[in-house]
Amino acid sequence: MSFAGVMRPGHAAIRVLDMEESLTYYTERLGLMKTDEDDQGRVYLKAWDELDCFSIVLREAPSPGIDYTGYKTCSRADRDELVGKLEDYGLEIEWIPEDELKGCGERARFQTPSGHLFELYAEKKQVGDGLGRLNPNPWPEGLKGMQVYRFDHVLLYGPKIIETTKIFTDVLGFDLTERVLSPEGEMNVSFVSCSNKAHDLAFVEYPEPNKLHHVSFMLMTWEEVLRAADIMSMHGISIDIGPTRHGITRGRTIYFFDPSGNRNEVFCGDYTWYPDREPITWTADELGKAIFYHDRKLNENFLSVVT
Amino acid sequence: MSVNKFIITIEDNAEVFTCPPGRNVLKAMEQLGRKGIPVGCRGGGCGVCRVQVLDQGGYRTGKMSREQVPVEDEEKGICLACKLFPEGDLHLKVLGKWRKQFLTGTV
Ligand code: FES
Ligand SMILES: [Fe+2]
Image (cartoon, rainbow over all chains, first blue to last red; front, side, top):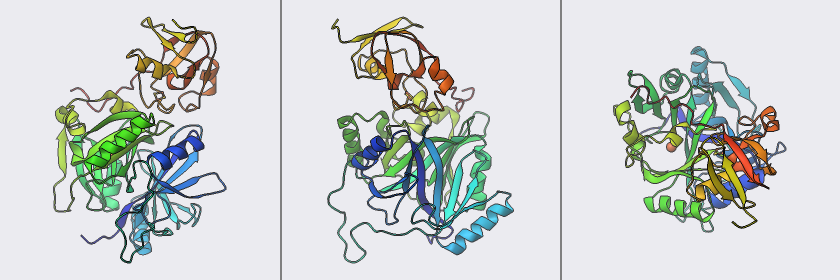
């Protein structure tokens, strides 16, 4: 497909209770690299296969959770066009100046009815993957921990997810790839894609606004997911569930928690999304299988523990 | 019973287990295969493991989400079991519970 408009999830800004402990976790265990920090004490991290200078920003705060999620557009013109559409749709835009996050261009921030903050930006300084773009090696040596390839998506919990999802599908050009319908036939889980991944963002209906369910990082193989689980046990990292299989997106996955209780995921292998596909629908009576394909039952912890 | 283990009593269901110094109460409970306090993130973030210390031989807490334990609550002995480190025997009341998960509706 030819990309236009929103290109990919570009960053997630995460609140942590203790920076030092969190930094050890995100670098030594997940395998992100620290690229920068700023005078507010925020720390910037990237995964090895990302070229832009950061994808995760950590901020020490009294309560964990997510501050905002940023999406990179293909060009500045695309960003401005989409911002115009958001304004026409009735959303208020707050412009965050260039370099408020170090290395990131101007960001257009808006809030969804679910209570979450999102940003669109077109430019971020590239620092590369250490391999170069000319006759590169396939991977760099000296990677740590789970060696995640990239930040992949977030799953957010909040109210009014039908309205919220509409902003992404009707205004920003995302495709709805999968959804869950409540017994009353209302969508209460939505997966949307701005690319040909099975999801770049997901929402679950929940009474409290602005909640984080998980931040996800990509691996390539099931063996790597298993190895990630080994690392969790080696270092006493809190595991939520897995390794297992999702019905939704077909992903092979494990869920676990950072030291502040923010849920993370590493996963591999969904499917290729093309815009000529119909969205997949899951019904409430098969929700157990939709979420965890082998357990085939609902997991209270997974459904209700959020930050 | 070794002298350097603390006795944790959960009031609601009369569950009793021991916790060595330096271990958090939730982990001690899980390692012994006991139940009684709901287990969530184990990181002081989600609030699922909220407890109130009723009478106590002393304890300290690690960093906990302020959203889950506001200052007024902390002054009443409310804390998160995954960040609760006993320094003596403790009696606990379980406050945390699974949030109503309504995704399933009436199914
Ligand atoms: S289990 Fe989440 S705060 Fe203790
Ligand atoms: Fe995910």
